[in-house]
Image (cartoon, rainbow, N blue to C red; front, top):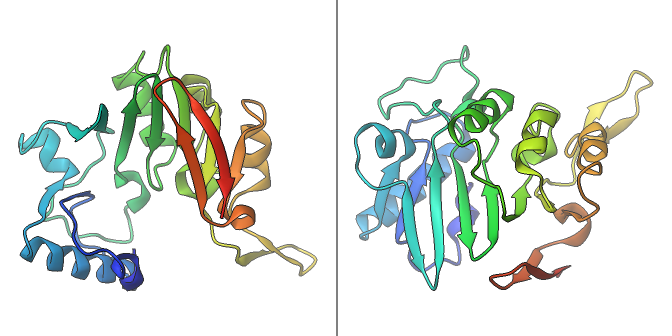
Length: 219
């Protein structure tokens, strides 16, 4: 979400995001780039407006049998929201699902357990009879991917995007990797052995047809 995100992209057709302004350098860089592409003709749909102002159907047809559906977590904020330190902004992450044939790919930014519980309630049988892959929410943090949610989604493949940065300090003064959390990896392993982390693989490439994922490899 920084300025480098869009460096090699010539054009963007549609933006779907959290909507409000949040005063961090990364968000400001993203928002500046978003406005640049909107001025060039890109459309923009804040998640809150999709469900509360009917600006677009939650389902976007991407062509060739692929759809992207924005899911309603019940936690999206109006675009005029003034963010403050009392709100956990991770809760307003956009949850969406890419569907192709019998495959569903779940993406939810930094969504935490509260939003996960809302999805379970709102979409009780949504993932039934599909091969499900997921991008680990909040980089594999312990605040996301609750057991309740993993029981619900039953992931066959889990992809983790997290920088290799030693951020946590143990009581003995040893720095350890923060994301993904070891406790979360152990939890994932109860559901699948197909766990992929860009920290060890680099850019992750997944190839699939309408039936299932065919192969996954790093660059």
